[in-house]
Image (cartoon, rainbow, N blue to C red; front, side, top):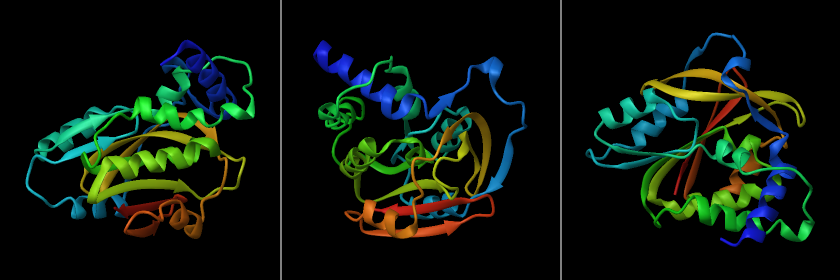
Length: 224
């Protein structure tokens, strides 16, 4: 990747993401205790992943030893990529012209370099809520490319108003239907994803199933 491209895209990331989703240093993280919550979406994800051991799972959230232990304990292979952290770590400062926005596509090609149909399941968690518009569709395309036909994707969407600050969580799997969530920062919602908008975003996939929880998270199971 050329140096001018790297510099331009780093400036783009600062403009479209860097100030909206902030992971806090360890000494500045909120002191609220982790929460344990039931997840219908997670339960459905594991129902869909009902093949023999040896499947490949991609986790796009913050690294969690609990997730490593749970997924490898089922006999599957886990890949992890904390995409929010990757985007944040790329970025210093000045604004970038609009003509460089297409470089978002190149970023995902460089950072999610997986084979076509490599994964049986992908855990996105609430990643989409913290991406600016130019980054959303390229990510969906990379996920479609990387997920095998019949593979399953789990993602969450906050139901708050545009501009509201919402927690940025680490999601740790405790059981097939239980998550331990720990706040690791905060971000502002760029948009509200209603069901129709989510269906349109993932229109190349075969099916979607929605679950609305009590804590204002819409959980979505998406099958390619």
